Length: 476
Image (cartoon, rainbow, N blue to C red):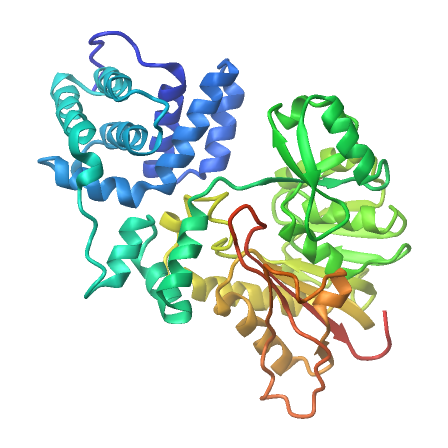
């Protein structure tokens, strides 16, 4: 159905956010990629870009709560409405409930303008009626009672799928589950990794402040910097000069746990766009050889551009399915292998809020199967005495401890090492948990340490699991 022009056109930031939300909702697009591409194509000013980003991420984060309220204000269930109208209502309600700086009359008027543009007079009237009700009593719509169904209450209150809330309640109880869900709905902190081959953290902090930015030291690693804006990072001269990379502090732990040495041969089995490959190269002083493997050539092209910006020469990009490792030149030759495995991403829902709606519980079974295949294949690259680090950005046991337990049961030449000590961390630091696979099925094996678990906390790092394994036959 073509748009009914109606009264005026809506704000361009809201229009862009609406189109991105429809892509995510109906086409299965990834929110971060769809938004980045839309913003790159647009000519929006900084305020409209900020508004589009706030609306797109906010609506996806709070979709469950928004739909609960809308279903109690509208004569038609949200799921039965056309995609554009459904997301216009969500966007309007998000502004009414969560963005106090936007006057209610403006939020309603802009939503009606969008409904005229992307619907017709009837849907515009529906949007107008529902959002006017929401402006009057949207905050008064009751949530589900916590008893007898705490799952539904937490799922609606904190906008998470019920299957995930149920899992977390069984594992952690209501207090920790609610706290974790609350963190998932916060904006993620922006953390930078200092390129120690070109500068020090102190000099980078001084440089950022001279460029008008606010920044401070990170908490866990000496290269970490917490960035407070306000300038877009890619517009900073320090970024163009290759003085830093954007990387969450928890995501720095896997390369740190490898503890790579200059001259080593290191395989990054699932390199993606290269955040950890470039970190490995920096920790090695760019001396040695890093074979960065990934299925997708476009990701490796981004890796190569990043390596060039950072001035790194030791990375060799290779289009390769990690399940086909080891290749002839790598079999039993690598000093270390990093397996940052494809996973559910349930530890990074602040950054990837669409994953909570995209994932299904059954997906964990398939992901665990893939993770076991990759870990087993990649281990074939490790020389005796060498290291393999297995990492994910999820907290789910099926993808973490159980994958490692299964691997150890079939690969008796490997032992769990101390990930904390290797990464240079103090296990007593708040925000870190000691985990570790049980290996009772492998009698006689002596464990030397435990895995490293970052639990998401407000203004802290993402959720991450890191396990370091050493192959018998010498020390790295």
